[in-house]
Length: 213
Image 1 (cartoon, rainbow, N blue to C red):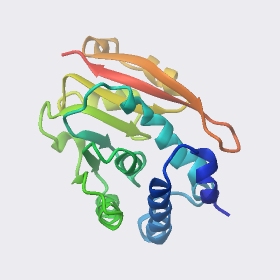
Image 2 (image 1 turned 120 degrees about the vertical axis):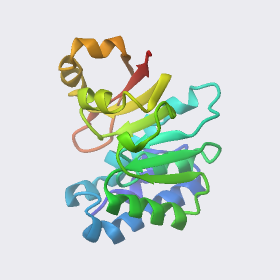
Image 3 (image 1 turned 90 degrees about the horizontal axis):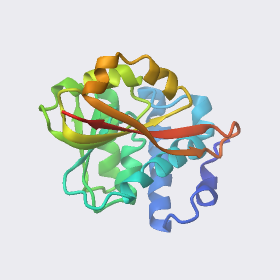
Image 4 (image 1 turned 135 degrees about the vertical axis):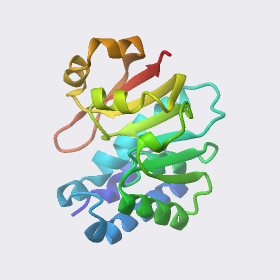
């Protein structure tokens, strides 16, 4: 049985309206999962703890930013975590959800329409399809290892642009495998750490990547 009914327990400060939209998103994922392979069966059992809470905790970094006046990209949005969760919790901000998988991009369109989100746009395609220097702020969860991400993001992230990556414990190993010349273009630091309320008490990290030039 899924832990979805524990959402209120895991996120006591989230409004009832937002929790209802989270439940609606869960039902959509269940409905389309078999045909679109959005999430594994085992992950579905801990979807509240592993996906909703991870998204919720990660996007708290947005609340620390003084002023956001450009769209926020969710890179590799997949099943909508964290982009759709962020759009629900921050209706005052605009989000562009990017995914190269056409089926998942179609699901994202279905989901934001069903949820009545007017602050979401879906971009089906690769990161390389995005215009140069078009991204000033982004979030990304479970998209790619840090070295590959830094390489793929080098063109469309603007100078001074920031990317918040949601990572597990392996992030230091990934960072250590980056070619040294990468750091001529990127600053990388750990911004936040937290534990998920899943059965393994998984440790998670928010890594801030800032484009230097």
